[in-house]
Length: 301
Image (cartoon, rainbow, N blue to C red; front, side, top):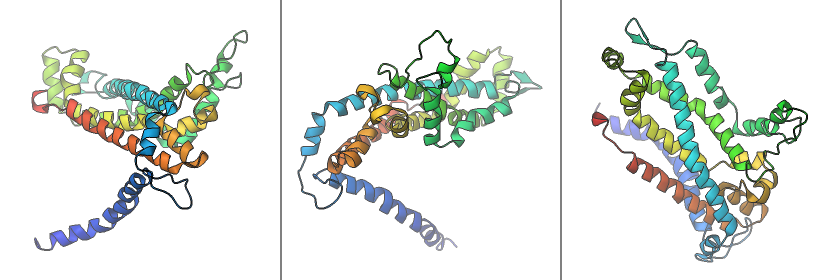
């Protein structure tokens, strides 16, 4: 039986690994190769070395997009994780204890479904919905609630607020998933730990910062990486919700949008691949740096 274990495992993994190598690793390798060419997306291409990266370095629109990705990277993980931790704590521990068992607030099972609901919607559908919510006239949901004497607020057409509007949608769409993730982590924390802390007179705030958060640190790490990668994307929302596929004066321009525009609108697939290479290494570096900086010993947390 022992000799037959490895052939079985190899046979079981062969097809998915092969598919991953062809459609994921192969696509990355092709992107790296195309980033060194002037390919327009069809026909033959010519090698240009690192000219695309030099052009990228001097491209003001790319730098604007990178700053916007940095803005999302700074706020999206922090705000989403903070809200999700608060809701998860309330749904699992916030109701106090009864009969020696901690419990969530009243109706917590219903709230879990409500919070998770946005995850059931395709991101494109979410973008269309919020495009109507932010509507620039009285047909928009928010502007429709304003008094008639007020001028409609041009949310997505205001270069000072358009990116923040995108950020709010990203947070709204993501919070529910991380509420469920953190709730699952809290469910694995032994009740005896909370009971001992309650006997010592610990308040809910103390329970959260001294027990719940340290024991959920691995979940928080995962959430931070996933949300960081999401902050490097935001393509669907920018493409659907904002005008000119980048907002007024490129106020919502992001790197993923630049890849799309250069590849399919400007017929500069080689240059788009160079931006993709930069985005790939930025996301990879972010994930590695997050794991290094947030590493801690759970036994001593």
